[in-house]
Length: 482
Image (cartoon, rainbow, N blue to C red; front, top):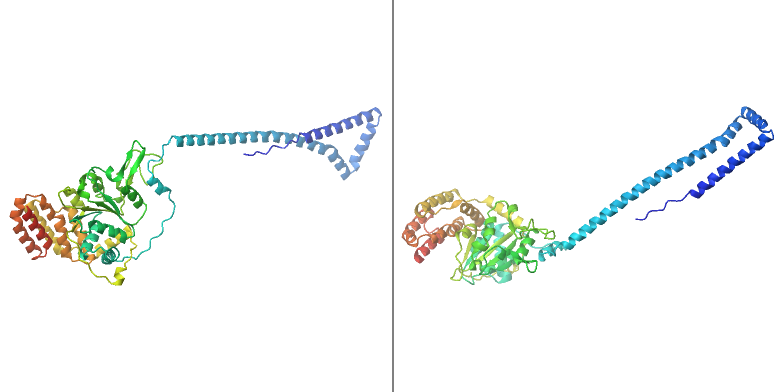
């Protein structure tokens, strides 16, 4: 910092002092001379007479001879005092500036030392996402005003743009499942379009789905999220972790496809995801990523944990053959299941339908649309009564009950399915088959076979002859295969 040097006035002071001494000496010499020549008394008489009769001139003489020299002496004394005080203030200010400068230098040195001690960042891709300041282009697309419109446009898009054909029922079940749970299982024979359906939905939303091939040796959360490598001092980030981190920063719908999810045990590597998705408060769903915290960790990690994005859906594809593991009740109870047993027939689209473009649709808009449609249609009182009767029958005969979770899923599923253009009884038949009668596979096969005909007769009497076709076919298949 530049400090101006104080101006030196000692030459002026010496000149004034010398002048004052010269004047005093001359005055003293004149008095001595006048006294020696006996003229001093005459001069004093003249001055005394002048002061009495001189008026204004006598006042000016006194002022000039006495007052001005006295003022000069006073000014010299005051100036000397002020210079001393100024030096004290200046020295104190300099000392304060020095202390502040030393403190800033010490803080900079401490910070530089700390930065030298910090290891390199262990997250590369996630830190790059934080550093990237480039604004994303706002995605343009058609707006959606109803769930039925969503189903129609998605079906046309998959067929016209991707050459993937699905029946209206398959699309309704898929959209209704997304509205009920964040975990969807697409199961059926190979080649029926399970992975393609999830992929097509990501393309339809303008946000491509991320495909995660499940490996047979997967057993825990780190197989999905990655792990810290002690040798390289880096965290091995997975594609799923990167997409989860990105999803927490945006509002778009994200689709994560767990391809062949049952080639390993789902309830092992996906256990924490299943538990967190049961927590009602989405802001409390956090997954552990690292056990400790570094200062240069990504901003989106809170105490070494990542938030499970509310705008991400997990869609697993499952093949039911000898090379895969059976999916446990814990997974089935929390997930929605879509059976794709056969490929849908191709259909002809108009030119306008074939040119269907991606839509602009966020997770918040999807949730608002679901709430609006569910408020518009609720399960009928008659079917509520039928479900209570069926629950009592299954408890009495098979020790199986619906439970609160399944009842909530049934109500939500039927509301959305009807809003997508389906019938209430078809929705009820579908979800009872997948959520309730699926539990018969864990029962004694001989007992199920002996009670199958009575159960089918009860279903026909309760819901109407042949109205629950899926449930009846499922019961006969279990009895036959058992």
